[in-house]
Image (cartoon, rainbow over all chains, first blue to last red):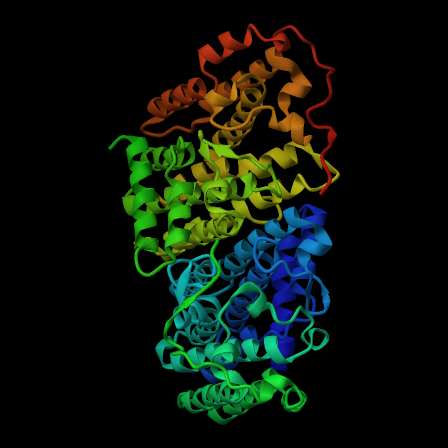
Length: 312
Length: 312
């Protein structure tokens, strides 16, 4: 099965299993909107691809691990869009969950998806309970304190934050968890995949920063220029477009090179290259050549410096 | 060690383990406020008491299970107090988390505590990985969809809800999970403890309803009269004070009688009786005798009827 189709199917299965019997219908409707509104499913595809490269034995366990990662990602988007954070009215070209279903249900939708993420994993069929526990620990570390996704969001409420600490927590942690989960589901050493996860996480964040500045909102499916508006760090504000793109390309090259020796190494590398083109399509760069930012040269700062961020 | 002290120690240990290294300091401060502001710790004490009655072998596993239950309870209070729900300015006599730390951090505090609850359990030292997984599944069922705590909160966003479905999900599920966790941590059959958990959950909800009407806010440590204000069902609105108290006492009697045969049956029954007095102290009933509600006779409705609730 194609990677995207398998990732999608794993999510549908997880959602159907948890939501069927006697749940509050409005909550279920909001959760369905949060999950099935056209996400790229890049994290679960990554998890499945690594598991395939590790000669997986238990496909259902890989699928559960992949779904769990995407459930956490979707939960974070719902809470992140709320008025207390980005106050974004749209997501993927549609009304955000709190816009469509109200703030109360958006809050609960995020909570329910976090719980569902752990739930699908702990209930995955497997002959190896310690493998399941390792996958749960991998997921929990990626989303909790001190260095997971929630901590990353919380750095936005501090007056100062170290940029890479913030980006690794908010974006990188779930990419790292995705590749590690692929290995862990097969009982393999996850550490050899860390470089791939780390590079992809940083590259994805850089791409998100670049798109926030140069893409128009219709293409993005959500409001643009949010980082400047909310005083959040953005690689484009520090490096400018030319160096920002070079930084993104270097990260993707490092990601390709980092894929460890395995039966499907070349296929996996090809997948990373394709993802690179999806993240920053050639036509987006062509479009940006006509923007004033193409010529502007930002004031340089160290990417590792402590950066001012909005206060709580 | 005294039950309350052991429950408190298990929480401190869980919090210290997860929050120590490099987390965003404001988030940690908000989480600390959410956890350590004078909760009665009834759920973790219940879990530990049942484990003791089941001749526990792995105290650290019981402690982790107890802490996990209380972490979930505290997470639900933080999100429940927020403006999108109860909009409560105080909790346990102090500013609620969003009042003290802002809405963004309150949202993230709830998220982080949910993750921490699963985390403390999956990282608990145990020789029995399947026992740990069973404890995780027990916790997840108690908080997620379709019938856990989050579903219970979501019933408040529906136009109609079945009262016992709502109360079992919002309050009962965590009591049930607490007693079951005590048994599961010892590898025992949790089902024999269901009647105790169910009765205590319903009794606790009834006590909460009664206190919401008759106690003054200073004694409560939070605003009173919230159910009437928010259009939520309340046993007092249906049964009145005399029958409401009788209903509460019946539930506590059933809870006492339900304790299964075990080495410490009488001690555990004594504990339930003491809890009954803590929930509805004699002086609170004396105080209520002077209120107009004492004499009033409400219009009777079936406690199992479908009840109108506020819309989202």
